[in-house]
Image (cartoon, rainbow, N blue to C red):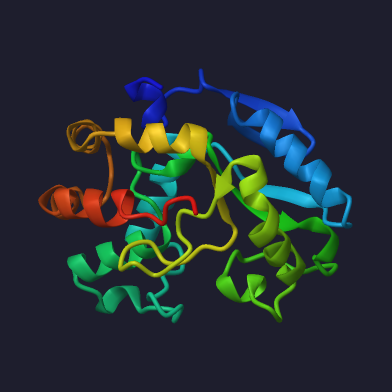
Length: 225
């Protein structure tokens, strides 16, 4: 991938699938479809809530959180009072659950957020929170199946554990043959250039802490087992 693709400013590396409905890197498409077919054999209807996400979409999410227009959660999942947070506290709260624009793994088209459409109750709004994927959650069957089968299709969970950066996301799968080279290719210098030229909220705080953010929230992941 080139720099524009790595940072979500181009879509030349992605394709649209109809089943499961998603936009992913062209090299990921076959594995996504194969995994969905295999899941269907045990009555799991694999749904993709998020695949490729461009820079502008990630930027809008970030800016709304910075301005307090979207709910902010602590690392423990408690709703925070936006007005009581210092800029550094606000930065940490956002980064725990949302990627920095330009540094999102979803820019690469290699990463997907998955659900089991067959177990969603009528009228229920999926939140993509850990409790939904626990042993008592609505996606417990999906979690157990992915634990046993995701690696067969070259997928892994980059945020399995709390490593002090991004919080655990049991719904987030990454296609290793694409995402590992992409992570290596995304440089700190490239990330700095796109942040400097963007209309991102909190730019001063982000740039002051960018080396830490790059290491803690981008590079420090759980590798494939």
